[in-house]
Image 1 (cartoon, rainbow, N blue to C red):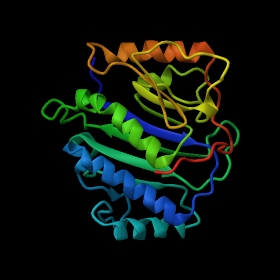
Image 2 (cartoon, helix red, strand yellow):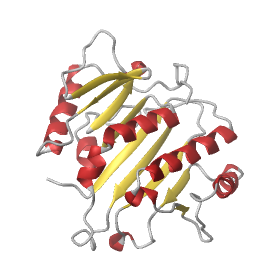
Image 3 (cartoon, rainbow, N blue to C red):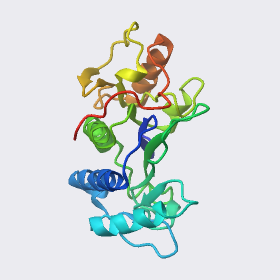
Length: 247
């Protein structure tokens, strides 16, 4: 089975990131995505009446983020590669970033970034979603998101994998095709189940499936179920407790 949408996400507890650091993180994210080529290198713009490209210039990105920073009604940053006609769009990404909360509450992770990668249904046959390519770089994408956002949890996943997560709320890590789980969301007394990939990275564990197998979705669903039922996962702390690593 090949999907027409993937999700790349990072979530973390409350943290007081200065505005300049938020700009640096967003710019680093766009630069790293562009380095992969393909549609990930296409221009990014924000979705407002007078939108403009924010991925060609850090100054333009800062201009957009400053406008939202000064807007009391703006809760998050939102940029996209969409041409504005979702059903007719070739493969593209849309990214939403909530970076300002100092504490999570009522089952909500304080901060997070979600990048949706998809293709419009009207063009999916002639311009297929590059599912295999994205899975093949999934470990590297997760590494990038860990390095950039310094989260408590990160994953390359899908709607199907999110739905498999028990008692799902945003403070509970998602286990996907490839995931990174900080030590702060793992019970040190419980071992993670075996997986194709299970390696230490930064202050956490990278766990995932072999992307080259015939049915990675079934394998990822199996891994997610085994991780969720192992009792190894804990919720993302309301306030991030570990010291963010340097880039």
